[in-house]
Length: 398
Image 1 (tube, one colour):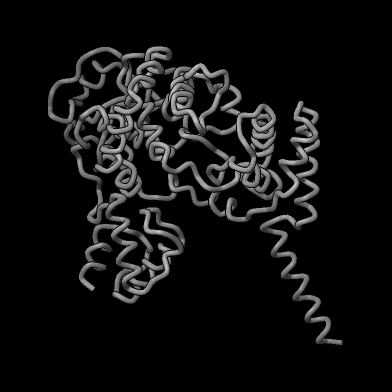
Image 2 (cartoon, rainbow, N blue to C red):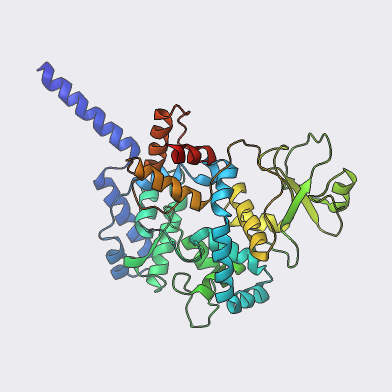
Protein backbone atom coordinates (compact mmCIF):
# COMPACT_ATOMS: atom_id res chain seq x y z
CA UNK A 1 0.00 0.00 0.00
CA UNK A 2 2.82 2.41 0.86
CA UNK A 3 4.59 1.53 -2.41
CA UNK A 4 1.45 2.28 -4.41
CA UNK A 5 1.01 5.63 -2.66
CA UNK A 6 4.60 6.60 -3.42
CA UNK A 7 4.26 5.74 -7.12
CA UNK A 8 0.92 7.53 -7.32
CA UNK A 9 2.41 10.63 -5.72
CA UNK A 10 5.37 10.51 -8.08
CA UNK A 11 3.07 10.32 -11.09
CA UNK A 12 1.02 13.27 -9.83
CA UNK A 13 4.21 15.28 -9.31
CA UNK A 14 5.50 14.52 -12.80
CA UNK A 15 2.18 15.41 -14.39
CA UNK A 16 2.08 18.66 -12.46
CA UNK A 17 5.55 19.50 -13.71
CA UNK A 18 4.52 18.84 -17.27
CA UNK A 19 1.39 20.96 -16.98
CA UNK A 20 3.48 23.85 -15.67
CA UNK A 21 5.50 24.02 -18.87
CA UNK A 22 2.99 22.94 -21.53
CA UNK A 23 -0.73 22.26 -21.79
CA UNK A 24 -1.95 18.68 -21.90
CA UNK A 25 -2.51 17.49 -25.45
CA UNK A 26 -6.30 17.50 -25.02
CA UNK A 27 -6.20 21.09 -23.76
CA UNK A 28 -4.01 22.12 -26.69
CA UNK A 29 -6.38 20.52 -29.19
CA UNK A 30 -9.33 22.22 -27.52
CA UNK A 31 -7.52 25.55 -27.70
CA UNK A 32 -6.65 25.08 -31.38
CA UNK A 33 -10.23 24.13 -32.19
CA UNK A 34 -11.34 27.31 -30.46
CA UNK A 35 -8.86 29.33 -32.52
CA UNK A 36 -10.14 27.69 -35.71
CA UNK A 37 -13.74 28.57 -34.80
CA UNK A 38 -12.70 32.15 -34.05
CA UNK A 39 -10.90 32.34 -37.39
CA UNK A 40 -14.09 31.24 -39.13
CA UNK A 41 -15.97 33.99 -37.31
CA UNK A 42 -13.42 36.43 -38.79
CA UNK A 43 -14.13 35.29 -42.34
CA UNK A 44 -11.78 32.32 -42.79
CA UNK A 45 -13.55 29.52 -44.63
CA UNK A 46 -14.37 26.42 -42.62
CA UNK A 47 -12.48 24.27 -45.13
CA UNK A 48 -9.31 26.36 -44.80
CA UNK A 49 -9.58 26.51 -41.00
CA UNK A 50 -10.03 22.75 -40.69
CA UNK A 51 -7.25 21.89 -43.12
CA UNK A 52 -4.79 24.35 -41.59
CA UNK A 53 -5.33 23.24 -37.98
CA UNK A 54 -6.07 19.52 -38.39
CA UNK A 55 -2.54 18.28 -37.70
CA UNK A 56 -1.17 21.06 -35.47
CA UNK A 57 0.85 19.77 -32.52
CA UNK A 58 2.31 21.58 -29.55
CA UNK A 59 5.96 22.65 -29.88
CA UNK A 60 7.57 23.44 -26.49
CA UNK A 61 10.77 24.69 -28.19
CA UNK A 62 9.15 28.02 -29.02
CA UNK A 63 8.70 28.74 -25.31
CA UNK A 64 12.41 28.21 -24.74
CA UNK A 65 13.20 30.50 -27.67
CA UNK A 66 10.91 33.20 -26.32
CA UNK A 67 12.83 33.27 -23.05
CA UNK A 68 16.30 33.37 -24.60
CA UNK A 69 16.13 35.97 -27.36
CA UNK A 70 19.71 36.93 -28.37
CA UNK A 71 18.82 40.64 -28.67
CA UNK A 72 18.39 40.68 -24.89
CA UNK A 73 20.73 37.94 -23.68
CA UNK A 74 23.90 38.30 -25.80
CA UNK A 75 26.66 40.85 -25.03
CA UNK A 76 26.32 43.58 -27.61
CA UNK A 77 29.88 43.13 -28.90
CA UNK A 78 29.11 39.48 -29.65
CA UNK A 79 25.78 40.39 -31.23
CA UNK A 80 27.29 43.04 -33.52
CA UNK A 81 30.32 40.91 -34.40
CA UNK A 82 28.10 38.14 -35.78
CA UNK A 83 25.61 40.35 -37.62
CA UNK A 84 27.84 43.07 -39.05
CA UNK A 85 30.76 41.14 -40.48
CA UNK A 86 32.65 41.36 -43.77
CA UNK A 87 30.79 38.35 -45.14
CA UNK A 88 27.37 39.95 -44.67
CA UNK A 89 28.62 43.23 -46.12
CA UNK A 90 29.88 41.45 -49.26
CA UNK A 91 26.67 39.44 -49.60
CA UNK A 92 24.64 42.59 -49.07
CA UNK A 93 26.42 44.57 -51.75
CA UNK A 94 25.89 41.69 -54.18
CA UNK A 95 22.19 41.50 -53.26
CA UNK A 96 21.79 45.25 -53.64
CA UNK A 97 23.40 45.16 -57.08
CA UNK A 98 21.05 42.36 -58.17
CA UNK A 99 17.92 44.06 -56.87
CA UNK A 100 18.96 47.69 -57.37
CA UNK A 101 15.96 48.52 -59.54
CA UNK A 102 13.44 47.49 -56.90
CA UNK A 103 15.40 49.05 -54.06
CA UNK A 104 15.32 52.31 -55.99
CA UNK A 105 11.57 51.97 -56.57
CA UNK A 106 10.94 51.29 -52.89
CA UNK A 107 13.24 54.12 -51.77
CA UNK A 108 11.61 56.59 -54.16
CA UNK A 109 8.04 55.63 -53.31
CA UNK A 110 8.47 55.69 -49.53
CA UNK A 111 11.43 58.02 -49.01
CA UNK A 112 13.48 55.46 -47.10
CA UNK A 113 17.21 54.73 -47.43
CA UNK A 114 17.82 51.69 -49.66
CA UNK A 115 20.82 50.81 -47.48
CA UNK A 116 18.63 50.51 -44.39
CA UNK A 117 16.06 48.43 -46.30
CA UNK A 118 18.86 46.11 -47.45
CA UNK A 119 20.34 45.95 -43.93
CA UNK A 120 17.03 44.77 -42.50
CA UNK A 121 16.81 42.17 -45.27
CA UNK A 122 20.33 40.99 -44.42
CA UNK A 123 19.80 40.69 -40.69
CA UNK A 124 16.33 39.17 -40.91
CA UNK A 125 16.92 36.44 -43.51
CA UNK A 126 20.54 36.79 -44.66
CA UNK A 127 19.26 38.19 -47.96
CA UNK A 128 16.70 35.46 -48.47
CA UNK A 129 18.90 32.53 -47.49
CA UNK A 130 17.21 31.73 -44.17
CA UNK A 131 13.51 32.34 -43.58
CA UNK A 132 13.35 30.11 -40.51
CA UNK A 133 12.20 26.50 -40.50
CA UNK A 134 9.39 26.52 -37.95
CA UNK A 135 5.79 26.17 -39.22
CA UNK A 136 4.19 29.55 -38.54
CA UNK A 137 0.78 28.21 -37.54
CA UNK A 138 2.27 25.62 -35.19
CA UNK A 139 4.52 28.19 -33.51
CA UNK A 140 1.75 30.72 -33.02
CA UNK A 141 -0.72 28.11 -31.78
CA UNK A 142 1.85 26.79 -29.31
CA UNK A 143 2.53 30.28 -27.98
CA UNK A 144 -1.16 31.22 -27.88
CA UNK A 145 -2.28 28.01 -26.16
CA UNK A 146 0.34 27.90 -23.40
CA UNK A 147 1.95 29.85 -20.59
CA UNK A 148 3.99 31.97 -22.98
CA UNK A 149 4.92 35.51 -22.00
CA UNK A 150 2.25 37.06 -24.28
CA UNK A 151 -0.46 34.51 -25.13
CA UNK A 152 -3.05 37.13 -26.13
CA UNK A 153 -0.58 38.69 -28.60
CA UNK A 154 0.13 35.34 -30.24
CA UNK A 155 -3.60 34.60 -30.24
CA UNK A 156 -4.15 37.66 -32.45
CA UNK A 157 -1.17 36.77 -34.63
CA UNK A 158 -2.53 33.26 -35.18
CA UNK A 159 -5.84 34.69 -36.41
CA UNK A 160 -3.93 37.06 -38.72
CA UNK A 161 -1.88 34.14 -40.07
CA UNK A 162 -5.10 32.25 -40.79
CA UNK A 163 -6.39 35.25 -42.75
CA UNK A 164 -3.20 35.25 -44.82
CA UNK A 165 -3.68 31.57 -45.62
CA UNK A 166 -7.34 32.15 -46.42
CA UNK A 167 -6.45 34.96 -48.85
CA UNK A 168 -3.88 32.78 -50.62
CA UNK A 169 -0.91 34.71 -49.26
CA UNK A 170 0.77 31.55 -47.98
CA UNK A 171 0.51 27.80 -48.40
CA UNK A 172 0.21 26.18 -44.95
CA UNK A 173 2.49 23.34 -46.05
CA UNK A 174 5.31 25.82 -46.75
CA UNK A 175 4.39 28.63 -44.35
CA UNK A 176 7.57 28.62 -42.26
CA UNK A 177 9.34 31.29 -40.27
CA UNK A 178 10.85 32.16 -36.92
CA UNK A 179 9.90 30.74 -33.54
CA UNK A 180 7.60 33.76 -33.05
CA UNK A 181 5.76 33.41 -36.35
CA UNK A 182 7.62 36.09 -38.35
CA UNK A 183 8.01 35.09 -41.99
CA UNK A 184 9.34 36.05 -45.40
CA UNK A 185 12.42 37.87 -46.65
CA UNK A 186 12.12 40.60 -44.04
CA UNK A 187 10.29 38.61 -41.35
CA UNK A 188 6.94 40.32 -40.91
CA UNK A 189 4.57 39.23 -38.18
CA UNK A 190 1.21 38.22 -39.71
CA UNK A 191 -0.71 41.25 -38.40
CA UNK A 192 1.98 43.58 -39.76
CA UNK A 193 1.73 41.87 -43.13
CA UNK A 194 -2.02 42.43 -43.26
CA UNK A 195 -1.60 46.06 -42.28
CA UNK A 196 1.50 47.19 -44.18
CA UNK A 197 2.59 44.73 -46.89
CA UNK A 198 2.52 46.16 -50.42
CA UNK A 199 2.44 44.72 -53.93
CA UNK A 200 5.53 46.49 -55.26
CA UNK A 201 6.00 44.27 -58.33
CA UNK A 202 2.40 44.82 -59.44
CA UNK A 203 1.38 41.20 -59.95
CA UNK A 204 -1.85 41.65 -58.03
CA UNK A 205 -0.85 40.01 -54.75
CA UNK A 206 1.26 40.83 -51.73
CA UNK A 207 3.92 38.17 -51.30
CA UNK A 208 6.97 38.68 -49.07
CA UNK A 209 7.93 35.00 -49.30
CA UNK A 210 8.40 34.59 -53.04
CA UNK A 211 8.71 38.22 -54.17
CA UNK A 212 11.83 40.16 -53.22
CA UNK A 213 10.33 43.42 -54.56
CA UNK A 214 7.24 43.03 -52.38
CA UNK A 215 9.41 42.31 -49.32
CA UNK A 216 11.62 45.35 -49.96
CA UNK A 217 8.65 47.60 -50.63
CA UNK A 218 6.77 46.34 -47.59
CA UNK A 219 9.79 47.04 -45.38
CA UNK A 220 10.13 50.52 -46.81
CA UNK A 221 6.44 51.14 -46.15
CA UNK A 222 6.86 49.93 -42.57
CA UNK A 223 9.69 52.40 -41.92
CA UNK A 224 7.78 55.19 -43.67
CA UNK A 225 4.75 54.57 -41.48
CA UNK A 226 7.03 54.50 -38.43
CA UNK A 227 8.10 58.10 -39.00
CA UNK A 228 11.15 57.81 -41.25
CA UNK A 229 12.44 61.25 -42.27
CA UNK A 230 13.81 61.27 -45.85
CA UNK A 231 17.42 62.40 -46.09
CA UNK A 232 18.09 62.31 -42.35
CA UNK A 233 20.92 60.00 -41.24
CA UNK A 234 20.11 57.45 -38.56
CA UNK A 235 23.00 58.86 -36.55
CA UNK A 236 26.78 58.67 -36.31
CA UNK A 237 29.60 57.78 -33.95
CA UNK A 238 30.86 60.61 -31.77
CA UNK A 239 33.72 61.37 -29.41
CA UNK A 240 32.64 62.12 -25.87
CA UNK A 241 33.94 65.25 -24.15
CA UNK A 242 36.76 64.68 -21.63
CA UNK A 243 35.52 63.45 -18.27
CA UNK A 244 32.01 62.80 -19.53
CA UNK A 245 29.95 61.10 -16.85
CA UNK A 246 26.46 61.33 -18.31
CA UNK A 247 24.06 58.57 -19.21
CA UNK A 248 22.51 57.25 -22.40
CA UNK A 249 18.99 58.50 -23.16
CA UNK A 250 18.62 58.31 -26.91
CA UNK A 251 14.88 58.96 -26.87
CA UNK A 252 15.41 62.54 -25.72
CA UNK A 253 16.59 64.55 -28.72
CA UNK A 254 18.47 67.86 -28.75
CA UNK A 255 19.80 70.02 -31.61
CA UNK A 256 23.36 69.27 -32.71
CA UNK A 257 24.37 72.74 -31.54
CA UNK A 258 23.48 71.72 -27.98
CA UNK A 259 25.72 68.66 -28.18
CA UNK A 260 28.52 70.69 -29.74
CA UNK A 261 28.28 73.22 -26.90
CA UNK A 262 28.85 70.38 -24.44
CA UNK A 263 32.05 69.32 -26.22
CA UNK A 264 30.83 66.47 -28.42
CA UNK A 265 32.50 66.04 -31.82
CA UNK A 266 32.42 63.59 -34.71
CA UNK A 267 34.55 60.54 -34.00
CA UNK A 268 37.39 62.00 -36.09
CA UNK A 269 37.33 65.22 -34.06
CA UNK A 270 35.46 67.28 -36.65
CA UNK A 271 32.94 69.72 -35.17
CA UNK A 272 29.25 68.89 -35.22
CA UNK A 273 27.14 70.82 -37.68
CA UNK A 274 23.84 70.68 -39.51
CA UNK A 275 20.21 70.38 -38.58
CA UNK A 276 18.08 67.77 -36.91
CA UNK A 277 17.71 66.65 -33.33
CA UNK A 278 19.68 63.78 -31.85
CA UNK A 279 19.81 61.70 -28.68
CA UNK A 280 22.84 60.12 -27.02
CA UNK A 281 23.17 56.35 -27.27
CA UNK A 282 25.81 54.54 -25.20
CA UNK A 283 25.14 50.85 -25.85
CA UNK A 284 27.98 49.71 -23.59
CA UNK A 285 28.29 52.71 -21.30
CA UNK A 286 30.69 55.68 -21.56
CA UNK A 287 33.73 53.40 -21.98
CA UNK A 288 32.42 52.03 -25.27
CA UNK A 289 31.31 53.46 -28.62
CA UNK A 290 29.05 56.51 -28.42
CA UNK A 291 26.45 57.61 -30.97
CA UNK A 292 24.12 60.52 -31.57
CA UNK A 293 20.94 59.10 -33.10
CA UNK A 294 18.03 60.74 -34.89
CA UNK A 295 14.33 59.98 -35.29
CA UNK A 296 15.27 57.47 -37.98
CA UNK A 297 16.98 55.36 -35.31
CA UNK A 298 13.60 55.30 -33.58
CA UNK A 299 11.96 54.16 -36.81
CA UNK A 300 14.37 51.23 -37.07
CA UNK A 301 13.79 50.44 -33.39
CA UNK A 302 10.06 50.06 -34.07
CA UNK A 303 10.86 47.15 -36.42
CA UNK A 304 12.26 45.11 -33.53
CA UNK A 305 12.24 46.81 -30.14
CA UNK A 306 15.78 45.96 -29.12
CA UNK A 307 18.65 48.43 -28.98
CA UNK A 308 21.25 45.89 -30.10
CA UNK A 309 19.14 44.95 -33.14
CA UNK A 310 18.62 48.60 -34.07
CA UNK A 311 22.33 49.36 -33.85
CA UNK A 312 23.18 46.30 -35.95
CA UNK A 313 20.83 47.50 -38.71
CA UNK A 314 22.25 51.02 -38.54
CA UNK A 315 25.88 49.91 -38.64
CA UNK A 316 25.27 47.39 -41.42
CA UNK A 317 23.55 50.08 -43.51
CA UNK A 318 26.65 52.26 -43.13
CA UNK A 319 28.91 49.40 -44.21
CA UNK A 320 26.71 48.70 -47.24
CA UNK A 321 26.98 52.39 -48.11
CA UNK A 322 30.77 52.04 -48.14
CA UNK A 323 31.61 53.48 -44.76
CA UNK A 324 34.02 51.81 -42.36
CA UNK A 325 33.33 50.06 -39.07
CA UNK A 326 33.02 51.90 -35.78
CA UNK A 327 36.26 53.35 -34.42
CA UNK A 328 35.91 53.04 -30.64
CA UNK A 329 36.55 49.51 -29.39
CA UNK A 330 34.01 47.71 -27.24
CA UNK A 331 34.90 47.64 -23.53
CA UNK A 332 35.95 44.01 -23.42
CA UNK A 333 39.28 42.21 -23.45
CA UNK A 334 37.75 39.26 -25.28
CA UNK A 335 35.93 40.41 -28.45
CA UNK A 336 33.21 38.48 -30.20
CA UNK A 337 33.48 36.40 -33.36
CA UNK A 338 32.26 36.88 -36.90
CA UNK A 339 30.21 34.12 -38.46
CA UNK A 340 33.37 32.77 -40.07
CA UNK A 341 34.96 32.59 -36.64
CA UNK A 342 31.90 30.87 -35.22
CA UNK A 343 31.97 28.29 -37.99
CA UNK A 344 35.61 27.61 -37.20
CA UNK A 345 34.64 27.10 -33.55
CA UNK A 346 32.05 24.55 -34.64
CA UNK A 347 34.52 22.72 -36.89
CA UNK A 348 37.14 22.55 -34.13
CA UNK A 349 34.59 21.33 -31.58
CA UNK A 350 33.65 18.50 -33.92
CA UNK A 351 37.34 17.66 -34.34
CA UNK A 352 37.56 17.48 -30.55
CA UNK A 353 34.75 14.92 -30.56
CA UNK A 354 31.79 17.12 -29.64
CA UNK A 355 28.26 16.92 -31.00
CA UNK A 356 27.14 20.46 -31.91
CA UNK A 357 23.58 19.35 -32.68
CA UNK A 358 23.48 20.46 -36.30
CA UNK A 359 25.44 21.64 -39.28
CA UNK A 360 28.40 24.00 -39.36
CA UNK A 361 26.58 27.27 -40.02
CA UNK A 362 27.86 29.80 -37.50
CA UNK A 363 24.58 29.65 -35.57
CA UNK A 364 25.40 28.60 -32.03
CA UNK A 365 22.60 26.56 -30.49
CA UNK A 366 22.35 25.07 -27.02
CA UNK A 367 24.39 21.97 -27.92
CA UNK A 368 27.24 24.10 -29.25
CA UNK A 369 27.15 26.26 -26.12
CA UNK A 370 27.19 23.13 -23.94
CA UNK A 371 30.14 21.78 -25.92
CA UNK A 372 32.01 25.07 -25.49
CA UNK A 373 31.36 25.02 -21.75
CA UNK A 374 32.62 21.44 -21.47
CA UNK A 375 35.76 22.26 -23.47
CA UNK A 376 36.38 25.30 -21.29
CA UNK A 377 35.94 23.23 -18.12
CA UNK A 378 38.37 20.58 -19.34
CA UNK A 379 40.85 23.30 -20.38
CA UNK A 380 40.78 25.15 -17.06
CA UNK A 381 38.81 28.07 -18.49
CA UNK A 382 35.78 29.58 -16.80
CA UNK A 383 32.90 27.59 -18.37
CA UNK A 384 30.55 30.30 -19.65
CA UNK A 385 29.70 28.64 -23.01
CA UNK A 386 30.61 31.83 -24.90
CA UNK A 387 32.24 31.78 -28.35
CA UNK A 388 34.94 34.44 -28.30
CA UNK A 389 38.39 35.24 -29.62
CA UNK A 390 40.06 33.62 -26.60
CA UNK A 391 37.98 30.47 -26.99
CA UNK A 392 38.90 30.19 -30.65
CA UNK A 393 42.59 30.58 -29.77
CA UNK A 394 42.28 27.85 -27.13
CA UNK A 395 40.58 25.47 -29.56
CA UNK A 396 43.29 26.10 -32.16
CA UNK A 397 46.07 25.37 -29.67
CA UNK A 398 44.66 22.07 -28.37
